[in-house]
Length: 187
Image (cartoon, rainbow, N blue to C red; front, side, top):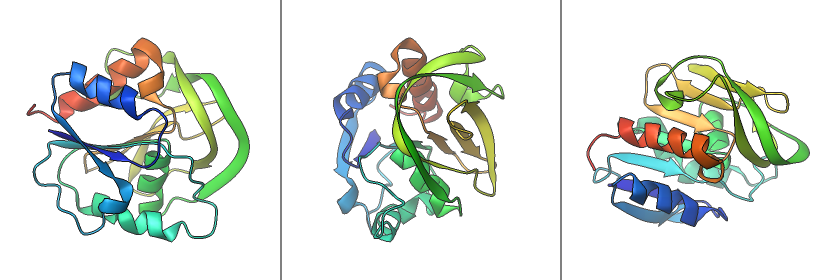
C-alpha cells in the first residue's frame, strides 16, 4: 500500500489515479497528521506539492511534521513542496523566484530507476516559485533552464524528489510515477 501525504496539492486526484492504475492500494494522510506517526504498513510514500511557501516564516512546523523522512526505510518521493522539504531536511536552502507555471523542457542527467524509459530531454509540468539547491548526500538527476535541481536522489537511501509535477505531466510524468511505484515492490 502507498501512503500519499496530502500537503494541500490541487492535483491529489491525479496522484491517486496514477497509484491506482499501477495496481497499488493507497491511503491519503494529511501532512498535519504525520508527526509521530508510524508508516510501517506502507511500501512507499509520496509527499505532494503544496501552495505553502517554505521561505515564509513558520516553515519549521512543516519540516517537523515530515521529519520522519530521515528515518524512512521505504521509498519516498517528494513532489514540488515534498521535494523541497526532503532537501531542506538534509540541509538544502530554499530560494524564492518568479512564478513558473508552464510545461518545461527537463534534461535528465543520469540514467537511473526514476527516469527509466524517459528521453534525455522530456517535458514536465512546473508550478512553483520556490526551489532548492542540492543537499549534501544527494545526486542531481535532472535540471532545466529555470531550475538547477529538477530531480534528485539520496546516495544511500530510497529518497527521491522532483521539482516538477509528474502527476500533471502526461505520459512522461506517468512513467516517472510508475517507475517510483515499481521501486516500492509489494502492491
